[in-house]
Length: 430
Image (tube, rainbow, N blue to C red; front, side):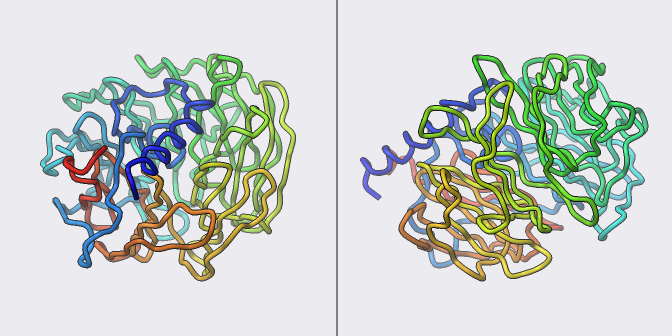
């Protein structure tokens, strides 16, 4: 890819993010990955990320690798520090690592007795959220913890399942917290109006409660509407727009289904051609997708159903009026990579039997991390499926979300965390 094409791709990504999504939810530097799905919870890396156009035949260079405990929580990276949340024995452990070397800088832990109703995974599911000098973790048994980024000192902790009488769910608590300003917003799933709870970032004190909705596994996301931040939350059965200051529900619509189903993909906001806002929510299990126009007081479906997209937990990537996502389920193959017209839901092209996984976008390319352990570098093209490189650095299952920061790709499976060099060498950068 030439320098002009590379620059245009990066500027296009910046434009589609900055128009609607810059809410100031976290404090981070260029190149950081401070929360689930990156700087804006869209799966799109920072604008200064520049990637290799091809990997060596042996795959991306391994910089370091280390053992980890159980869990499917992906990592976050801020200012050269990587934050890992996993389980060792009967302790949930948060570790700060040097992102370049993998060496532990500090550890903090708390007791857990969690065991899931379904499956055998007993570790945490939620990606840590870094906000300024604080890192927030949400454990599988509902333990919400705020730690000092520099030292690991515990600032506050709330046992949300016990405090708000929340149901355990199939796999435990799994919705990564969202920080907007001085509030931490958590999809708790508590009873008596504590479905979603807002906590003070500085003290952990609950300041509002909203809805009687059970929790989902989808992380909430932030959106700026009329110069005011709002929170989009997908619960077990609904999609809500909330005022993060007091928990007021601005609007809601049904999304989800009773029975053995989950909502797990993060709601995605993107700009419409008319200058308005669009929302996409997706789930498998016969639920499908809803793409809607919305503002602060109303939401209107544009297209919906299972034909275009019904993804179990892969959050779609939006770029230049198009959506890319892996359609289907991890546990029930096959799964299809789809490229969709965001305005209509029409499938532009698809790659059947692709295999399930998740996506990250950067520098005009896509990184696919498949649950079987294979990773692919793909062209982000409207014209068809094009693999630039592929590798298998870790055995599957690879279910934790990948992180991309400063040219380093961080992946983890059930036993290992690996750091790979996927960035363009400094001498070759624009």
